Amino acid sequence: MSNQKLQAVFLDRDGTLGGSDEMILPGEFECYPSVLASIASLQAAGKRIYSFTNQPVIARGQARMEQFEQELNGFGFDGVYVCPHEHGEGCACRKPATGMLTRAAEENGLDLQRCAVVGDRWTDIVAAKEAGCIGILVRTGAGQAELDRYEQGEFSERWQQAYPLYIAEDVNEAIRWILEKDQEKRSMNNANPEWPIWATEAIEIKPADPLWIAKGAEEAAQLKKLLSDYQVSEIEHMGSTSIPGLPAKPILDLMARIPSYHELGDIIAALAAHDWHYVPPELDGVPSRRFFVKVKSDKRHCHLHLMLHNESKWDRQLRFRDILRERPDLVDEYAELKTKLADEHKDDREAYTRAKTDFVQRVLAQ
Image 1: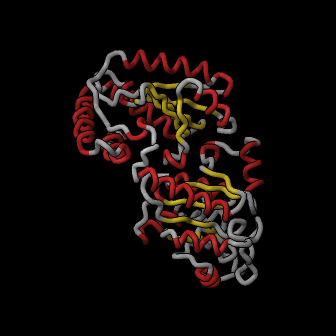
Image 2: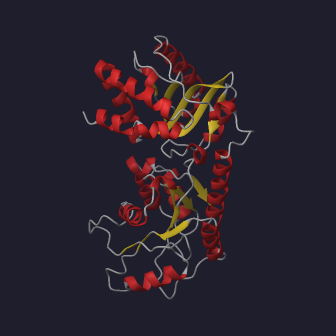
Image 3: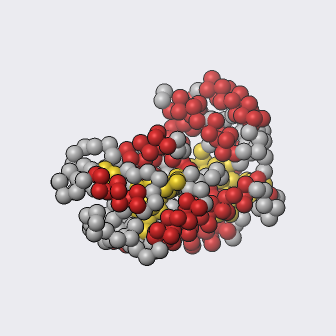
């Protein structure tokens, strides 16, 4: 989750709130035990709740939109978003498309990176990832079968990339997890004195060091040995320290590709023995990776961005690096921007990163 407060939760209907892996018409649908109380607990914590459901029975004439709206509003939702279309109609709202999420964001002033999606199908998780939301899979409904399909290698490309941030037994557990992690974030933002020094160190830009490239290659070689048992196929030095002549935070950023996160627990243990600290996704707030920090003398020395195969950010990171390696004029412009932003956001890494977005996108568009 982002360091900022979670704004809203989108909940799927069939197989998540109740019912089964099949569609049940309004009037016949029943929530699982304690679901309404869990929804109320989210609202009591100041979270907004929205529906997020495909209902092709509307297009088939078996039910009306008004019936779903009445039912879902009765469950305590703050807003109802229903796709009434059949599969294959080409609409922008049917999951895994993000239309319902983007519409809700526009109508309610939401930042989707501060929202969570809970569902029992991989379409929910794909939509969440592509919209920038936290994706949570429940094992109820079709959830366990969907997870089995993923583990059997039936998903590819963007589907294979969209692994949920958390897997819950049911929606009640998912909501408890959301509230617990949100509370942890608030505690962190309140400057908990027990938080590691390296986790809150200020941003400091250093002059370019010609040794960064060699040090990056050395760290990559060490990681290849440590991760050799986990099908890691590539490790790349990326980020500012990989670009000659560019001032940067003196932290080496490395990214590695891996087929799945199934052995993540073993990887965490293996890296921990070599001063690598795992930052859980709910604290990292970047669902596209699993993040590790190598610490020396209470300071960040290296970052590892562990990504699934076909993660689109992999290619974007390499393209940005390679363009700047060929364009000294852009290196100078980026150096000036980074120095300025480091002064403005010295104690806020997320704000510093966000403020560089326009420059990064402009470079990638070239």
